[in-house]
Length: 64
Image (cartoon, rainbow, N blue to C red; front, side, top):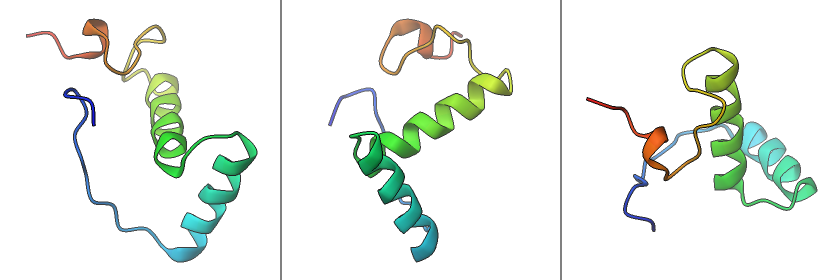
């Protein structure tokens, strides 16, 4: 696991997980990558992160 990523346990219903698995398979991603993609897209659309921020880059980290 990359040093800048954190593990987070997620409780999710079986039907939602199955749907995410099918979606991930369609887009040739792992379930983990699909969940991260969906969350990142939602955050960008909500104005919570900048469009250019990518996981693991300095711009993606909160500046203090």
